[in-house]
Length: 341
Image (cartoon, rainbow, N blue to C red; front, side, top):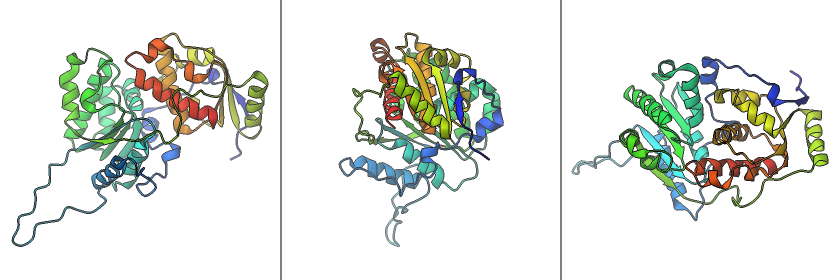
């Protein structure tokens, strides 16, 4: 099939996606399609990386079994295994690589890999009961960037995971926040403390330390192009593949009209994303939708070229000081990477 070439406008795209297709798309993103424990290289300066790798290999059914007791000595009783593992750490320390390694290593039939927002979007698009039915009997659920940003998500994910664990599903998750601290500083956590802690009980928490392997400081800036350089970048990409070209304000407005579960389809076939006249976002809902869009672009490893305000500055100081700070910082890290690719 010939490669599609030319320029498209994301604001003109109205993607549709059904439940079966949404479920089928829950696999590791392209850059982790071949991730394995062998290809994960822990930083010797941070022993917790290798320790996490070994613990996760055992969770996935790999590695040495504990030594059994001899004829005259009683074997040590292994601690009761929890149904889930929860990998906590900062940006760029290899959490998603390890999560994808679990997915690839576990020899089970029904396994799924998605970001937290993909699962909550699935519930939003299909309804809670339909989502439970689709996942019931799954062997493994991998959840990347586990976050609880509002009370509704807290209750939905707690109920969903509780039902799945009760039916034998194993869980593996990553996050930048330990599970017993989820929700702190974001909403009235005390109102949902019981649900948060009950969910945390399902996981063995594994801490992984380190520096961002992308070696980008968060005070660095995303690349900004002048108009001639921008037009050349879009034209060059469109000559051999498919490039998008949208005013930033038009894309932000369009994201409000597209369900987040369909953002990945907005990017179908794209080799480059072009954004003109980037400006600081002043609406938190719009900012969070843009974060979800950036996550999908990063998963697909689609470079971004932009004019106007540097993309790492689109979230204002007030937003960065609020309850969604970690989410915005992750997006900034990814935006810097995508503009420099």
